[in-house]
Image (cartoon, rainbow, N blue to C red; front, side, top):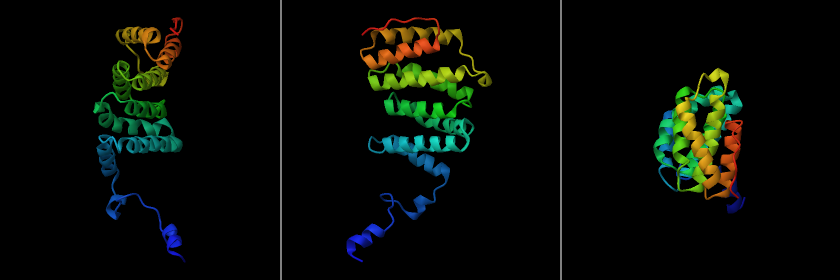
Length: 193
């Protein structure tokens, strides 16, 4: 066997992984992923790991298994500021936790979507609209028992109308129009080209 063949036959392991790291408890893994969220180098792999875990849980048991996972990750993700990748990860978790998303999660995600929709970054505004769409969809499920107060709906409708007509990004305007039409039937919207 040549030296190159011997190297190819060795098992591939993650960089700097040790035996101790491979036997971490779930809470230790979560803490390590939370630490990774704070680095621009490791944030994307951490979010990919969380997203993959939510899809695996969903494949095994649907929203019933993902909803507690979402609840566990909310405190780690919500305070990390308006970043498109975080908001998109929250959307992914919320989408896969349907129809079992907790009332607490719906309220927290609604606030996050409303806040991120005002971001200067178009990608963050777009992710916020997607998150808002899934939150509105979950709130309409009869088994959820979540009802959005009229005091919350009016500012959302105003924000969607504003984004649909005045957002500088064409894709964001288009998404805002689609979401407004879907969420608030009977409220026709004009789009700015």
